[in-house]
View 1 (cartoon, chains in turn orange, purple):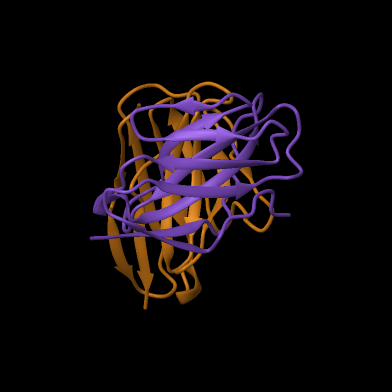
View 2 (cartoon, rainbow over the protein chains, first blue to last red):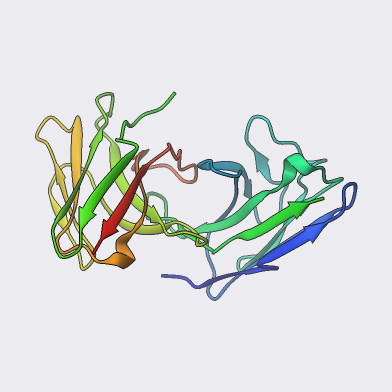
Length: 114
Length: 111
């Protein structure tokens, strides 16, 4: 399976600032996704990162808060904008190459906002 | 709406088989059953998936009932490293994308 690297692995940020998380895959993949895992909770899909077009967001998530880029088939970024303590979560990138095949996940970015 | 139901927690003795149940009574004909696990501080790890036949790989076995309304993940010889949250997910076999994670089962393997 693809090797997925996320940077940073963790960060502590000030309220009102923004942070960009990077996801790099060691091979070209068709689909890339971003999930959020709030403390003690399960994973929730934020959006699908589409190469060459705007990301597709799930209900409850908006582009102004979570802008996403996907410039090629191996890389994507998620920005968490104007952060508040409620944004303290683990943010995970996942990839999928063929419809119906398993998704594979990075180890996430653990974000704490003070 | 939750598509699967799992017990919140299970304990298992090291070296013994761990049998993790999952109910998915509303599963449709083209939906697969996927299992993932999440070890603390790591991303979810894919374990196995199946449609209607039993499946086995190097990590686990998946037993799906004939009516497909439930399944069991079997870890044949549990080790301490198998302590994790295990997620059972149903997903359309022809679709991309969304994995709907429930609360999962917290499995603790004890010496």
